[in-house]
Image (cartoon, rainbow, N blue to C red; front, side, top):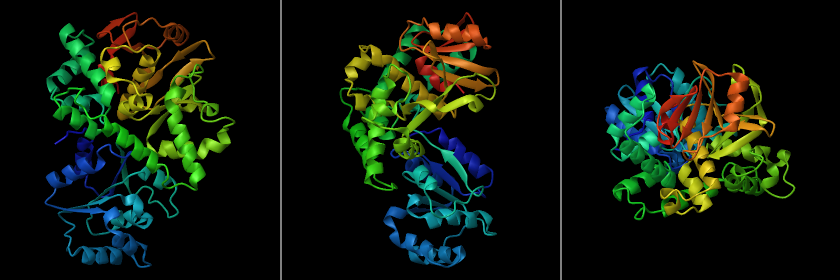
Length: 434
């Protein structure tokens, strides 16, 4: 079994009674079906799996103008299965194919009968934003899922003892043994090459972590499936084209001298009003993550962001490298120059998102910029990302002098430490930041 941290959230849902149907939202190929399937098989006496892409008749049943109880009865007859809801969990996969079934989740929540319902689907986030039927607000528990973070990558590669050491060093800000530190950095670079898509990670594990044997076509195929998805749930082919153009522009956008997303970089004469809806499609798909700028670091920081001034990050490090067509050798041997920092920054963004940290960055005109802003129990904390051990940062110094945070975080290839009120966190420990 490929261990995923979201499994503990599924167990939490089970232990709290499962009254609300569960909906797991995330991009294609991140392992939603796999982990929900494992959960249902392991934790319940009986399990019914229904993939709506394979059961057009069930979609038709839920379209009928009859009450939901009757629809459920007809579904059981169609499946030729008398479902005992007391000890049976039902997994509706690809639920985005039926707006009516999504709306019916309200019935499953409110019915006297005890239903145990979990659902997931491709582009479900997009579908929910564009539903014509009413969504059962407050009647469904929603969980976001992302590609495997670096900790899950280490687990898959059998590095649990290394994880324990990383967490211990992070908690106590004590340097890690240099041999282990270098081993963790090597694994971090390996993760950059393939990213966190479960199929890619599994292939690397099966090839004994030999990047020369790794099948790079896995990420290429996922990237192409993402491009194909951009024709779904769109108003017309022109919107689909704009979605694709935004997505393809992101690696170059991350290298902008302006350090922000620019519509003019998508196409000549591109304007915000023409691309706002396609951009929202991409954000809803979770294929990309938005990081708006914070002009005033006050509490709560989300109240002081400027939504129209932002960066976009890709949801997976492996997809970014594939789009840039970077040779794996140049990552492993640390041969990159300018884009090394951009790749590291995108990687940190994905780790922060996986830990439910909102993405925000700070800048002061064109004079200074801090990569990320963290808001935790200790206040507003600036985070600077460096791709190597050259950690000099004028921008971070300006921020510290101006706002005097309780401390700052610098993520780099340097070992753990604490100096001049700056926590040094190695890149491989970014998953610890919560």
